[in-house]
Amino acid sequence: MSSEFKRDEIRAFRFVRCAFDAQTGIAQLVYAFDDGPELVETVTVPGAPFVLDGVRAEAAERALRLLHLIAGVSYYKAAVPEEIRIEGYTIDADTAALLESVYLNGLGEFAYRNGLNLRGRIRFPVGDAVAGGPSGPSSSGIAPESPSAGTAPVLGLPEHALVAIGGGKDSLVSIEALRGVDIQQTVTWIGGSQLIKACAERTGLPTLNLGRQLAPQLFEYNRQGACNGHIPVTAVNSAILVFAALLTGANHVVFSNERSASYGSLIEGTGEVNHQWSKGWAFERDFGDYVHARIAADLHYYSLLRPLSELAVARQFVKTDHYDAHFSSCNRNFHILGERPVNRWCGVCPKCHFVFLALAPFMPKPRLVGIFGRNLLDDPAQTAGYDALLEFQDHKPFECVGEGRESRAAMAALAERPEWREDDIVERFVREIRPQLDATELDVDALMALDDEHRVPAAIWERLRARFAA
Image (cartoon, helix red, strand yellow):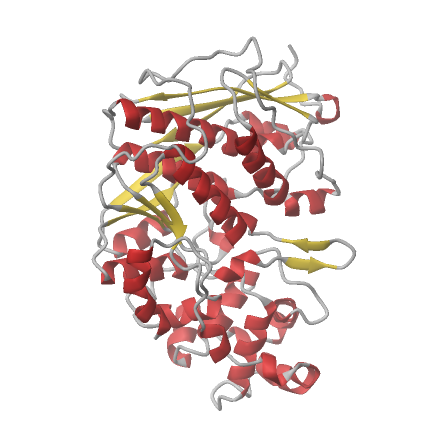
């Protein structure tokens, strides 16, 4: 059989099987195109061997299958065939609906950049499993049945949180907030990033480094012309952490996505395309509800920062300088094929632009310039980048950055500060952009209000509300 990847000739994407070895802590997620070679991804959870009782083992198997189905998006996108096959187990209509939403919306930017229309194309099969695929439970002897909606068991999971950390300001705000209300937590990340590891260790809390190894053929397929582009990586990471929580014993899986993540880029002639869809409220709501109803009734998945705007998160971050020399939100430092950590901030990408602008209204100028190594707002070469953040003659960048109204409000606030108003980017904003804006929409304080749309458990939120309001 030829190993050549002929994208346009592929007819089906197959979910071949998934299995977990409790003795080693390694899960295998297996996929294939048509009758081509198996694509084997591995996810490693430290702490093996794992001993799970019957009910918890069944929940772990359901979580493993959900991970198998969501992580498949990394491979499906290589050819986006019209047929999807699931071998060895079945899914119901609710599961199919969740997956179709994740694939369609999570691949929104990918589809836009590749000139594809995925609407109506992605259909997950409901009902009987496809014959011919290896079936049966994982090595822990788990039955394949899945509970119907709303009937997931209470597992008696310990009161403990796995908190995802990405090395940026947001997760550090969540970690310090949970520490402030005495929630036991383990700082958790996926992959071998030394930047994230150093930031996690800086917290002084227990850490958990999960492994994810993509099938190596995927990179060869990319070289042979496979479709490539952005995937809903937060959806994949969420499924990995839910699976890890069941193995290690934690009843909270906590992310740090603020409400601004729910808003995408408005593209003329296309509409809204959200680079960070799986960080948004729609995914959090649907995925969290599914986990609660179908995996474990006492496993809580949520973003601690959902009620906050990006600027409100920035205001929280500046309260401590403990992480100034350790955190980085610069995406150029985080790559699937390895880091380039020569500097923690490149100073020219949209994330650097936005984080600098978001922190500026709340942080003393010398401290901020010291973090970045230079003043990004006094560099004319950064003009186009800031125009995109302001949504001035451009759309919001395809990056995890705040809304245009937040950038405009932050810039307007700096225009009133003597230490900032003469800087090149700020001075241009005052001269050319602010006269075209509605002054009533430039109030930073209005963006500090807490939103009621979130999944944070009531007992935790009541203890945090006052902290986040200040």
